[in-house]
Image 1 (cartoon, rainbow, N blue to C red):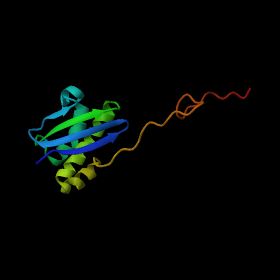
Image 2: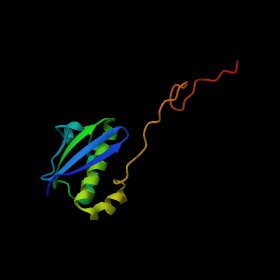
Image 3: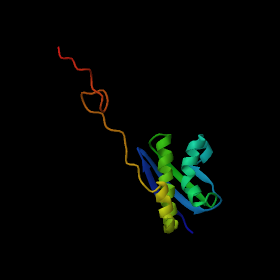
Image 4: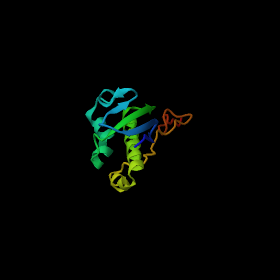
Length: 128
């Protein structure tokens, strides 16, 4: 098997993933998974597609992460890994879709409007 690549996005984060057969090593921006995401919850979020298909420890994953915060990056990475696994074996798609890993979460921050302090908040109205 050669390299399989996929892309995942969430909020402002973009994850580019390269999957190869190996022993389960995940390298994000030249750092190990537990160094890049110290939180065990975010490590679990990243590994969810692998654990769902029971292939944790079967693939080496090289990741280029850019933009966004740590939560958005973790969820972008989860989507990218799920897409790469489907490229390897299309029969895994229904299992990943049932868990919600194949859907791109399109929610982003609403832009700030002029004449307002935030996107929806308005300055206090004064009649007189």
